[in-house]
Length: 170
Image (tube, rainbow, N blue to C red):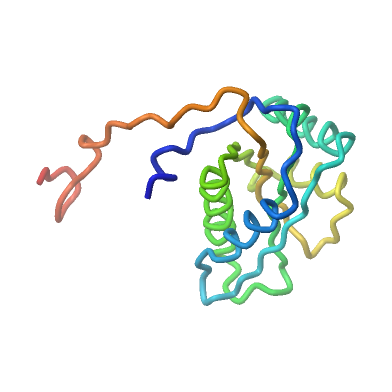
């Protein structure tokens, strides 16, 4: 899949909004992710308001790219819908990755900004978005049109592959 190899962490965007139909496709792709026991306890908040994006950029020094981002998708887990609570972060990780891969497919780009499991980040995001206690923020996906399009880089991984037992090369 070309999108897997072309994906990279994009933090610099054109001053151009992301169209509604593309936002819909991003979310649809996210909701196609697998989830433990098919619990699908995920929800999202779509952020386009510049003031809210600026406030979210204060969550961490690494979130500064939100100040110029035209779009952020905050991924959330609804505790009320959890069948297997110990797997909610894995489910939301799959959702987040699907959204980022669809972004590449739509000639957008983005970066995954980690919120969970850091309690202070989770509390800050919850406060900004007015989340009830049953909703847990997982990530913020900053998305937009790349200022300078490029492809991802091929990574070296041969030294990390083992067969049958750890340390045994193939």
